[in-house]
Amino acid sequence: MAYTMNDVAALAGVSPTTVSRVLSKNPYISAETVNRVLAAVTKLNYHRNVHARRLAVGKSDLFGLVISEIANPFFPEVIRGFQSAAWDGGYDVLLLNTEYGAERTRSVIRKLIESDVRGVAIMTSSLDSTVIAPLTSAGIGVVFCNLVPAGRLVSNISIDYKRGIVAAIEHVVALGHSRAAVIAGPATNKTASTIKAALIAGLKRRALEPVPVAYSNYHLDAGASAVRDILSTKNTPTVIFCGSDLIAMGVMMALEEEGIDVPRDISVLGIDDISFAFLARPPLTTISVPREKLGVTSFDALDKMMKLKRQRGAEYALETELVIRESTAPARKGQLRNL
Image (cartoon, rainbow, N blue to C red; front, side, top):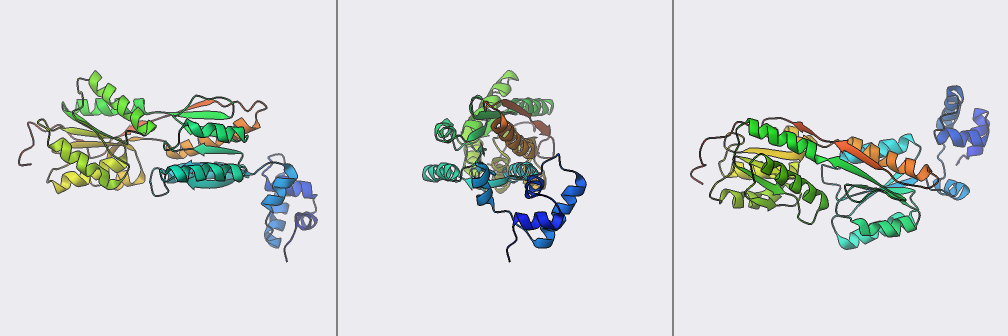
């Protein structure tokens, strides 16, 4: 039989209200009471009726998280951080992905509104500021990453890519590199454009103006054609800066196919520090983005904003760090041959 909250309360010797507070992780309930209630929940195999509770309190226990694609290794740690923070607060998570498609994106926005989420973290640059109005008009708080300034029902998390990029450029300068190239992410992607601009500006300041600057999507095989274009230039670079670790690993695969050694012939750097970066051969030097912290901060920003009377958003900042591994080495002398 299906047990009710009243059954749990009777078994634990408390009121139904106390059971509800325990299950919502109210911090003001004594440990002894919490243990009694949880023991009763376990014994009766009780599950809350989320829809009934939603009707009773007039609020959703659901937060949304939107990413580009589940297969992209950038996102698992973001998801873990967001979901862990939500669950610790007694909330559930609706995970949606856009797959970079316009129709899919419209479906995602509809699903968020229909599901009556309290707030949504949009952790993909495949969505832009045009999604704000439909969500905030429905009373849904939104947190973005590097997209728009904070406002009512809108918070923004800025990732300081410049910090890690400056450290990466100083690293290759110390290794004696004088010819650089950049393979950025998609030209239409706002985060990719931010990273590309920071790379170009930083390299120019150190008299390492990148030639050429190419573009790629975020897949392993995407760097191959860009690398071939780079290798066909008159002065091949001694170091290639990539707009993501996936691009960088694709670049290293393509260079290996061309018989070019990394890092002896060409050094390669990425951005993100995904788990595969350490497993690459050679292990990838990269700029680490605190992705799990990004997930936790995203939820905390939403939760705080939705509890404020005026629901005013805020600005948050996360820093990046250079992680030096084996894909960078002292610059070679002279030009590559036999290409």
